[in-house]
Picture 1 (cartoon, rainbow, N blue to C red):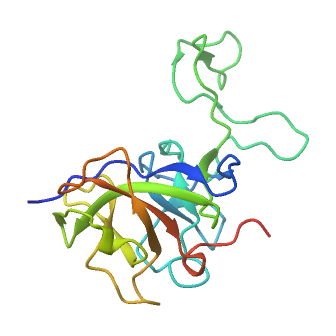
Picture 2: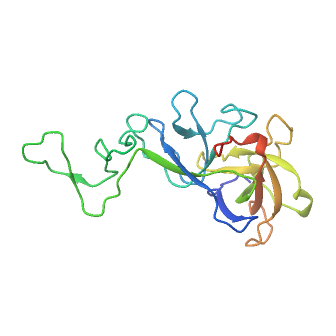
Picture 3: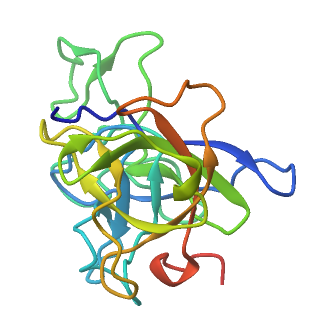
Length: 210
């Protein structure tokens, strides 16, 4: 049975603190969804969709899991303010209308429209944060078992191209593994495509904490 994954989300921390959340400038023309692995572009530091095990320092190169959908910016960080300055650029994610008298480049913004400062948030894959994701095996839904706990697996984009799942078929350490299964998700009765709780391998995550 082909797999249809759901967004990856943080579910708890070992310390009991809140998951770490970063906001960095968004790379141009990104259309990724909430709950997918992202990377930081080496050239300009923009957040972009992760390409399996090819980005960032170290094996994996995962910067985090997106906490919101990308905005498809025309250029990297469009609207991002410089330090100690107001937000520049159009600055509105939606809701512009009409025109502003005597200001050809200005826009009317609908009341309540969210501002876009050119950045996007993502959960940092620290050793403290545990995430939940759909479980599968080489493109098919699979039933997680107690024997999967403690195993290292990789991530794969589902066949519909929407979200990523923990892939039991990816088991080559240092090549395609990026996480360790911590436990089965207690919210699910184990079945094909149910969820597991995992921790990112720190060698597969980009260290943004300094």
